[in-house]
Image 1: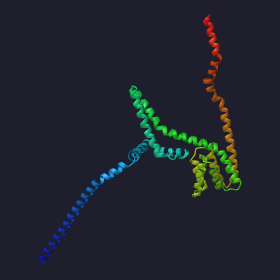
Image 2: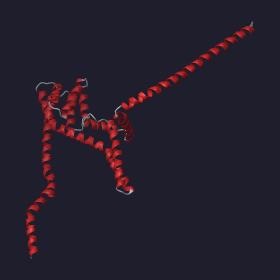
Image 3: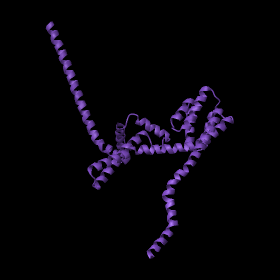
Image 4: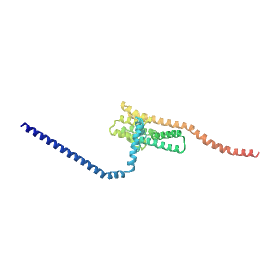
Length: 310
C-alpha cells in the first residue's frame, strides 16, 4: 500500500514538473516570437520615423538640440546665482518676449565660441605669435561671453530712463484721481490706461496682481523688486508703510508727487550745469581749430608770400 502511494506521489510530481516545463518553454517561445515580431515591425516603421524626422524644420532638428546643449554648458560654466541675477536683469528690462534665462545662457556660450573662433582664425591669418593669438582670442571670447549681459543691461537702463521721465506725471495723475474720489485700484487703472510706456505696463501688472487676489502690500513689494529705479522703490515703500499704518493714501500721494517733481527739476538743472563742461571737448578739438584756420589762414599765406619774395 505504501509502495503504491509513493509511486502515485512520484507520478504526480513528475506530471507537475513536466507541465511547468512545457508552460515555460511555450512562454519563452512566445516571448521570443513577440520580440522577433517587434523587431520586424520596428524595421518596417523605421523609414516612416526617419521620414517624419527629416520633414521637421531645420530649427527643430538641429538648432533646438544645439541650443539645449549650449544652455546646459552655460549653466555649468556660470555660478549658482547667475541665473537669479539674469532673471533680475530681465525683470528690469521688462522681460522682452524673445529673452529668457536659458536663451541668455545659450547666447553667452555661443558668443564666447563664435567670437573666440573668429579671433583665433584672424590671428592665424595675420601670422601673429602664438602668445599674442592666445591672449587676443581669450579677450575676444570673454567679450562674446559678456556681450549678452551688456545688451541686457543697456535695455534695462533705457527702460528705466523712460520710467524715470514718466513717473512724475503718473504720480500727478494718480494723486488727482485719488483726491477726486476714486479708489486706489481705479486710480491705478486710469494711470495704466493713460499710455503704453514701460511705467504704464508696470502699473497694469500691479493692477492685474491685485485683481487676481494678491494683497496690495505684496503687489507693491513685487513691483519694487522688479525695478532698480530708486524713485519707484521710494513710492512703493511709502505706499506699503501707509497701508500698514493706516495713513490716508491721498496725503502720501501728494507728498510723493511733490518730491517727484522736485527731483525732476533738480535732474534738469544738473544736466544744464553739465552742458558747458561737455561742450568744451568738441569746442577745443573741432571748432577752435577751424576758426584759427579761417582767421589766421589768409594772414599766414600772405606772410609766407612776403618772406618768399624777399
